[in-house]
Image (cartoon, rainbow, N blue to C red):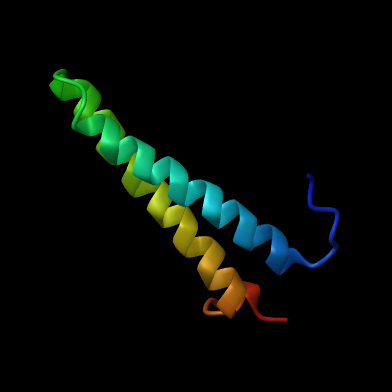
Length: 69
């Protein structure tokens, strides 16, 4: 069911959950492929997604001046 809440923290939590699942899938796929370029692509992608997750956490915790009201 779609989240119809107007509370942005509910949405950020849901998105972070999805990003975490994608990161885990990428890390698992690294172990399944033999192509070094694909392994590198998956690892770099996982690291980028971790950075995005951090941005969401910073927003939730108001850790950056851009997120402070």
